[in-house]
Amino acid sequence: QVQLVESGGGLVQAGGSLRVSCIASGDTHCLTSMGWYRQAPGKERELAAGITDGGSTYYKDSVKGRFTISRDNAKNTVALQMNSLKPEDTAVYYCYALDQYCHDKEYWGKGTLVTVSS
Image (tube, rainbow, N blue to C red; front, top):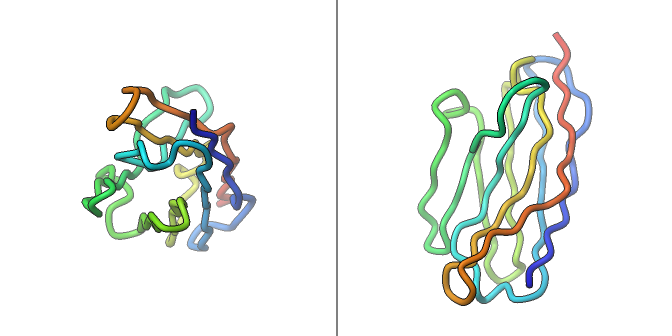
């Protein structure tokens, strides 16, 4: 089992920056990809950014150039630095982790709210 705990988020004006972080505990040696999904009000959850244990990254087109995902395998953390935030970035951001080495499972954090005011 893996537990994910997010921190960060909050309220920021458009054009500002925020950082959300996630720390994993438990069977972290089983994890492959980690990253962040987000869900805006009335919309489906979508993948914002992801990173493999080898360091390969993925970004949703609308966040490319503004968001940067990073991962520290030794500390079992993944972070998302969000710059030039827009009101449409407002969402609950969920940390996720994939266990593809041991049990073929996925794990989710409880989410942290990011609100960007115009």
